[in-house]
Length: 320
Image (cartoon, rainbow, N blue to C red; front, side, top):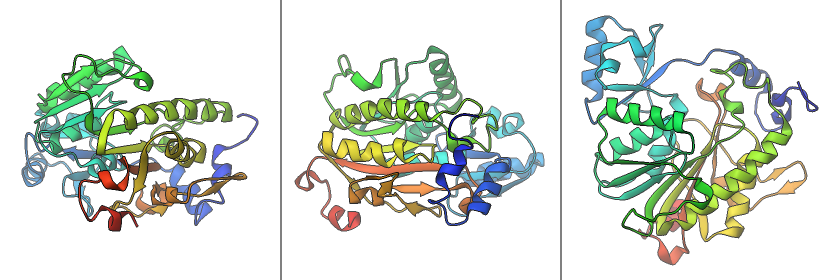
């Protein structure tokens, strides 16, 4: 494969059960849909699936997440009418962590093809301004298609390098909240992309980490004091996760705050291959495939500015 062998070998010391971790990574990923609240509620979707004989199981941690039984979600009546959207289960977490208020200004820095973007629009009640940015024209086409199918109207589609993103022309100078679902080495997607490791190299991990640092720095600076930034990846690599957070804690005015992850998770790691990170990276969330029968994921919630800039008096306790 490459000079490091199986990439999963790197993470044996990070997981509680290496055999279960590897077994989960070898199994196909369950097919999941998210209910689009702009078009229907979860009970109406359930009735529609029942009426057409489509098997499903509702997730116990989120009323609007359905695990499908056998049938491709894209062939169902609710999908055709924009009531549901195919979205990996852990992929639903960043929008829940960001939790943008209706009427606010939100930036999805790496938006296409739009699963998380359209979920943000749903949580915003399709109000305010939601800027979906990406660099790929092909992926932006998919973003537009998904937004149209799901009935999203508050979306502004943009094409810029997020590392030096300009707000010129938007009519405001800062966002209230920003999502950085960063490009990454995609190790956590191995269950749905069995060839994900075919071209994996440690050089790529280090290279993409530099891009991630640049995007997250810009996201923090483009978000108002007291605003929220959520950083997420679908990789296990600390170089792309905790090391990126450690970097921005020094380079930008922000801090990591706690949040209640609804899935089983473990804290971020503070040491990796001789490098130590800021102790607050423990507030980040690591999700492994064998804990919830999902893909692998990483997420951290950051507040911009000093504690004096916080929006609510209880934030200091929540972050402790």
